[in-house]
Image (cartoon, rainbow, N blue to C red; front, side, top):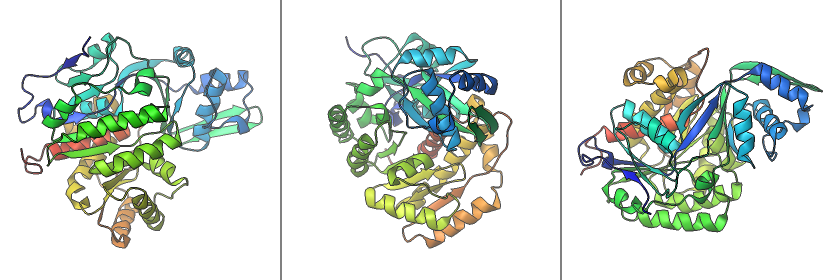
Length: 416
């Protein structure tokens, strides 16, 4: 049985899907509504203590899932974790009000690009009727899936403020963030579509992401070899962007970095992923601290332009950094619009965000960082907007969609 695909007949038109290929996997997401009273009840029923609130502990039941959620909140950061049983995800989601949405970096980036007027093709590793129903008809896909079914990912949007009391203390909620919990065998296998190489040959802009859920090093090595072989078929002027993610294994993250960095033009990540590569925390408004981090990161990945996007700024560092100034601005605008408007992101709302003035502290940071860096660096400060119910899931994906839209909309960047 050949895997399913949906490719428009106008794939070679100026806005056709053949121009932009986004991989490597999409999901169905259960986005639960944060319920402090419910979480408080679960923490009390399970007798969770402060020292058990650890974001790195294994997740094999409801108690450990709640403890991990509170552990992330305690450390004021987001992340992604593997859950040993999909039943734990389903049962926890059933306790909450929730919205069923499409997820995965490539899919959310495609939806943002669609809102901004650029059509694309995504690469899927699983598919279902629910996905087909939610995925717009004017977006296209290729797939490696030979069967039906997608295991939902659990998405927890931590709010701006809150407090969970425990038996021996409390966990304050200070600042919004997003948590992702998964048990997704197709993403663990990460099979590549037989149509991938053909799609690569047709594309001018390509996105690679999604290896973070894999668990077997030997299988990962095979998939990376297959991907690099497919990327070898790309046209000479094509641009390849890699978007990092929250790896379930630091060893696999290192393997992907070492294999991917020499083959891509842009290596992109958020602040959590930056700090994971370096194994330490970084003050995101201290130019000297960030400059040192970029130097260390450059030693780990000497080839590509490095892109880092955070809630306060986004930057590109490398010899070609100035080529991506407009992409950074559009990426920041798209991510901020996602934060404020969620799925109601539109081109006009992104444009309105781009007109706002960023806080002085963000602007001072950007100016100082670009001044002290020896490597060419462009830094775009982000604006600061307070909303009652911010969307924290998909901000990095929206940044990627905005970033690539700015490139694909510029017909002179990459000739046909």
